[in-house]
Picture 1 (cartoon, rainbow, N blue to C red):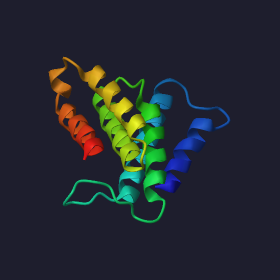
Picture 2: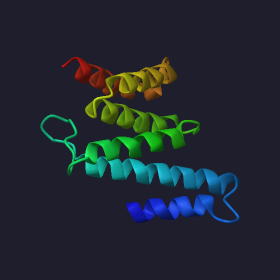
Picture 3: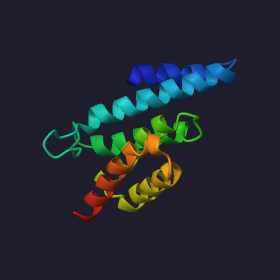
Amino acid sequence: MTSATQACEAALAGPAGAAGDELAELRLLLAETLDQHARVIAEEDEDTGRFGGLYEGALAEASALASRAETLLRESADVARWCRSALLAAELAVETGDATAGLELVAVVEARIEGDDELGGFRGHAGWIREQTSA
């Protein structure tokens, strides 16, 4: 995952840089890689659905990776992809003790999907994250 991230970053920052469609594709690829890396090291508990961390400091690292991915996708036309990334970042923020940041991101997701039936499935995950902060 680290190598894939570095390759995407190098392509984005290369001497000629990427432009147009290539830039957008590289940003999506980097965001996907960051999200996948975050999920792997956050290690979700199958019984509780909560993240426990693969090693000491893994949740904080995963939270930073997910936050970075969300930022890359924020202006993407693929709202569903952004929602998945944003909710991962929100959930990891909550897990690392930053409930305020997590809930703020949940609220942004909820506002963006309001009235969109195709994206309604994200409401359940957003609600679950809210519940975790009061548990």
